[in-house]
Every structure is written in structure tokens, then in C-alpha cells.
Image (spheres, rainbow, N blue to C red):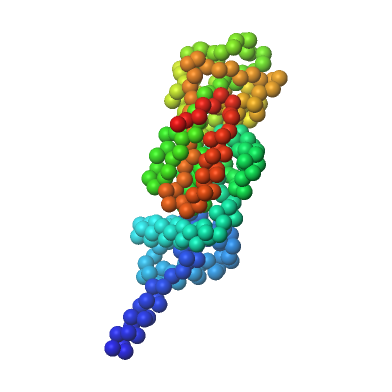
Length: 314
């Protein structure tokens, strides 16, 4: 009996692991580099390396394949990393549930938005929260849709603002508004004298677009007729960069209506299109996100916004 119990205790001790160790392996899997992972975890690189090696020994499994310039996750390690992420998400949920009874607004809500939305939606959103006298505070971030989606799934963000189509699993999606696109033109452009532009005519004008990876670029290509230009477009890194190129006479570009007040001045004008292409914006969060009151306060503030050209979705 003593031998069996002693062996069992040793086995349980050997497979014991902490949440800190799980965070180490998940972070290393994301960064694929010990130095960057250690920096994110706020520990020295040797500390991280030793902890991960001990975890691999306790599991009797090689999770990472070490290389001179970084690491790769082994096929067997992929399953371990995925399960570790689930455990960490559940632990975060437990922590939030424990503090929920005290104050859901004690910690800022981490909100992300796509690049073509954040700079133009965040300012009125903050003003709306102040007008509502809301205790909600926000950490704000901008990125590509696929990066925001991963951050939401990993628990690095609490909610994200993206454009449809967006239907990942285990995610609650709340429709917010639909906004049309505008055509941004140099003030000297012949079309600047018009009150609106026929969408089919756009292919006749040199067109500037955002670079690969921006969902707004994909939406424009899907909804706007660019003719032979679609395969040979000049690209810019941001809407503001495109605005400067338009002002310099290099062509025209599409912008979301919400961006018009921030981009139009005496150098450039924005004109509506007929028929008007558009996009739908939604708020996405994890189904089991525990801070419901904080999320509700954010949703109410977003739905109360009066945005240029935008139509609220039911």
C-alpha cells in the first residue's frame, strides 16, 4: 500500500503544472521566439526556458522543436497548446466571475477595431461614454480583422469591432450600423463638381486602394466595379496616406462614410456613389465573457452614436 501511494504521489507531482507555465507555453507558441516570449511574460529568458523544459519533462512530451533562430510547435504540441489556451481562458473567466460581485467596471474593457474604423469611431465613442456618465473605461487597439479575431479568441481582447462577414464559433455578434462608401477626389478633379458619382463610372478614373490584408480593400473589390484596374491598383498603408495621394493628384479612392469628417478639407472632396456600396459593422465578444454589465454599457454607447451616413441595424 505504501509503495502504491508513494508512486501515485510521485506521478501526480510529476504531472503538476501551474497556470504560469501554461501561459509560458502559449506565449512561446504565439511568438515562436524565446526572447520575445520572455519579454511578454516579464521574465528572464533562462527562467522561461527552464520552466518550459520542466513542463515538457513532466508531460514526457516534446512540445517545441528548438532551432537556432526560434522554435516550432511539434504536431503533438499543437494539441497541448490548444488545451492550455482553453484552460487559461477558463481561469480568466473564473477570475472575472469572482470579481463580478464587487465591480464589473473596476478594470478597463479591452476593445479592438479594424484600421478603417478605430480612428473615426473611437473619438465619438469616448465622448458618448462621458455623456452617459458611464464608469466604463476602455483600452483601445487597432489591427487587421484576422489579428483581432485571434486576440479575441486568446482572451487578449474582450470585444472587437469588425465588418461583416464575420462568423467565428463561440462568439456573440451584435449588429451596430451599416455605412455607405464615399469616393474621395482631389478638389480639382472634374467630378468634384458633381453631387454624386455613378458607381459604374469609377473604373474610368485611376484608383488608389489600401494594401493586402485590409478587409476594407476586399469589400471595395467585392462591391465596386473597377474593371481592368482591379488587378493593377496603387496601394497605400492607411486611409490618411491615400488621402494625401489623392490630394497630390494620383487618383481617387474609396473611404467609409464615417471617415469623411476626418479626411475631407479644401484639398479633397467626398462624393456619394449611386448605387451606394456599403459595409455592416458589428460588435463581437466571446459567448462566455463574464462582464455582461460592462459589455452592455459599451453596446448602448455604440448604438447611441450619430455617425455620418450610418444607418443603425436592428
